[in-house]
Length: 281
Image (cartoon, rainbow, N blue to C red; front, side, top):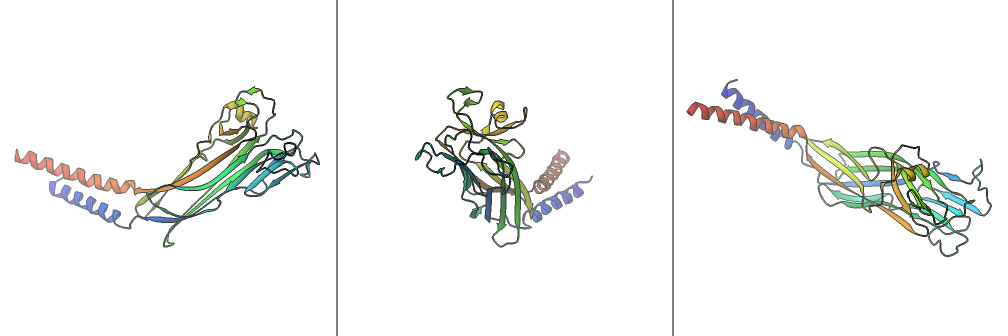
């Protein structure tokens, strides 16, 4: 291939890079809507009959998209120590939907959260067995011309433990278990990329409270997950609360093929330069 031809190809590659990079400016900001919720109709409770009624008349439970609670019929999950014989526990989602604006390649933003309020529950009262949890994300460019959507569903297993003060394989037996089956992507690192006008954007959804972690196999199995199947989550001591907070960010870089054009052009220029040096020598 002649030097003149290589020079022309190099120029073409660099011009293509410039044209691709300048085809559209990076979206500097987005409006967002992030929803975290318990899927209606998926909550399963123990100690209820075929019609969903508690088998103990002193017990009760409640389930909607943001609140799951169980235990004594008239208990208060927000203040379990107010009446020790009338305890109730709960899983409560807050700040959902989370809405606002976020800058591309800017600081992360706090998003949804949920709290496990753990109270000692009598063994014959209703308690949570499992439920499905959904994450829904919508990013929209400020002018409304571009949109990114992401929907994920996770299965949650829960174990209301027997309070006997003994040690179990996962720790103190009294500690209740919140466990999510380990899938890809995991809830504590839910990232997804999309391309738009020569830019590759990545939506990063992550836990900021450091509670969701891989659980011991004994804890996974105790929560009702099949043996050998990994899970992650947390355990909550009795009469304590565990808050799980999420945050997210949006990052962007030029698409890989855009860099490839530039590198190809620069490589060809290098070939021309070497040939010119050899000719002079």
